[in-house]
Amino acid sequence: HVAIRRAPAFTLERLLHAHEYRCLIRFGYRDKDRTVASDAVRIESGHWYLVGREQGADAPKFFRLDRMGEVSLDPPGTAGEAVDWPELTANPLLFRDGPEVTAVVAVHPDYRGTTERALGSAISVRREGMELVLDIPVVSHKTFLRRLLELDVRVRLLGPESLRAELRDALVPFVGPS
Image (tube, rainbow, N blue to C red):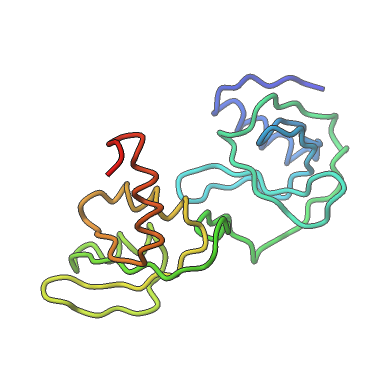
C-alpha cells in the first residue's frame, strides 16, 4: 500500500492516479474501512467525489473526498475495469434521510433560480404579493436545511411544520431553546 497524506489536492491527485492506473483504493469513511474500485472521480456542487464499487458490491457508491481518511492505494491493475455509470449524479439532495415531505418556501422572484439550484426544483410556483411561493419535494432533510440556512434571509420556510421543527431543533445549539 502507498500511504496518502491528508492534503485535499494531493489526495485528489492520488485518486486520479488510482483511477487511471486501476489501483484499488483503501480508506476510512464514516467509521468504516473501505476498499473501492474507482469508476469516476468528479466534482458535484463544489465537492469532489469518488464514484466506485465497494469490494463485494456491484452498485456504485459516492464518497466525498474531504470525508475520506487514511487513504492508500494497491498496486496498478488491482481494481479491474471501470464501469461507466452515465445516469448517476452525486446529488446530496437525493440522499434520503427522512420521509418525503413538500417544503413550502417564499422567495423574491430575483432569487428563484438560486433557490432552486440550492434546494431542488419546485413542483409548483405561485405568486403571493411580492414573493414567489415554491413547493419543493424534500427527501434529504439535513442537506435541505443546511442549504436553506446558507441562503439566509433570501428564503423563508413556510411549511410543513415538521420541517420547521427540524430547523428549530438544528438551531438550538446556536441560539438556545425557543
